[in-house]
Image (tube, rainbow, N blue to C red):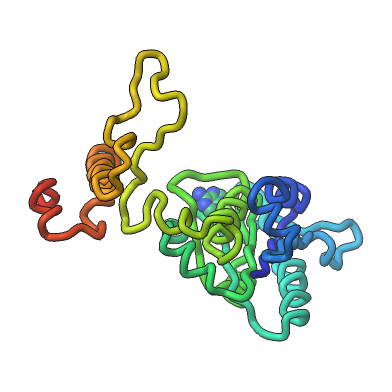
Length: 241
Ligand code: ADE
């Protein structure tokens, strides 16, 4: 899978994505991450990429031409119109199912805005999806783009060494993950739950399922309504009340 990140801060994005699991997958060639510097495409002799907003108001607006030319270079290279995501608090909220769905794309272009906004006309011309990473305003789209690349990449086959972990972790089936424990058996007077030491995998699985449901009910009751629960589970955990 190939990611093209249109940004004014390519070093920020590349540094953030060159380590750990994502960095390793990129080195192996499972992923390609390319930060495209929008400023490289300006036709302004002072390398300007922004200007004052028509109609007045605070801040500057990113101009259409450099963004479009940077996008066009990608489009020419891959030979078709790519799915292009604009990171903005005005988009629908990013979530796990979206990450999974987008992991099926051959390539994704992520457009990072800055200043007060981006000229609407280039958004109309190139953007296919608007996405927000949360109901707060950041100074630019770079961190959201990195969040998206990370979440999408780990759903790409081969990126996680144990493919299982991509499927069973938090938010799969709409539930939070069960608690995990490792050695030692007792730490600061706290014992590992007995069931995990039993070797009874059916019991362990049932305990983990219960923990996932209880946790979701406590910390994210909003998720529980659309989680994959059996009718029995719904009744037992009083989900519809
Ligand atoms: N750009 C600024 N804030 C953002 C947010 N919350 N999500 C996506 N892009 C953004």
